[in-house]
Length: 270
Image (cartoon, rainbow, N blue to C red):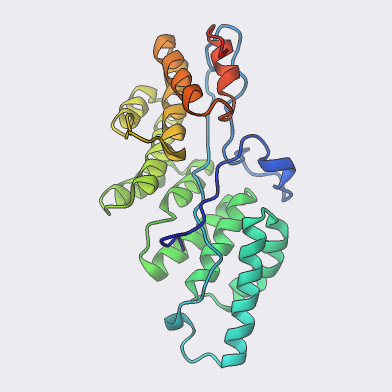
């Protein structure tokens, strides 16, 4: 689970560093994050574009909590800790297939150990196996009561078209006093679900209520700005879309496809 000092995996455009997703074709394409389809020359985003951008996955190499292995023989504890550590290192190195091979038998045998279920769920998520990932992340939440992976769980629901469950997850998250990054990632997913429902104006209002003017922009702020600029583009508010993408370009010029979006909107990034 995400803890103080955890390594934060940055979102990666396109196919996540050279085809890290080597699993079955997902039920719905959504690499982490998925740039929207290339804008048309008019600058208008294609109608019906889902513009799904996966939440940032937050994880450190898992360490077993003593309460979860109470009563387990010490040699078995050591073997489990070693296998879980290996899987965590594979995950952080984006060797998701290797992590899956290690975790699959562990997840079956140790159904009540939260660290196993969390890492297995996140691995399935990164492989685009939305239903299985949602099941494991639900189990993780039930075991711990933790909310740190709720944005990821909500994104699984969104990929499956279970939009009411996205809104339920957002409702749980926003009432749980999470950290700034977690609630912003959840806000982005919830707004995406509203857009999927044909409610882009409501999605815009939800994003506009987020942290739009931080003193020191971080990754999740850029993701929020991008989602909002994309929605402005989709509803035809091209001036605000240009300003939004230009602001991102000022902070991080190579962020996803910002330069291409600016060019498509008639505003060169040079």
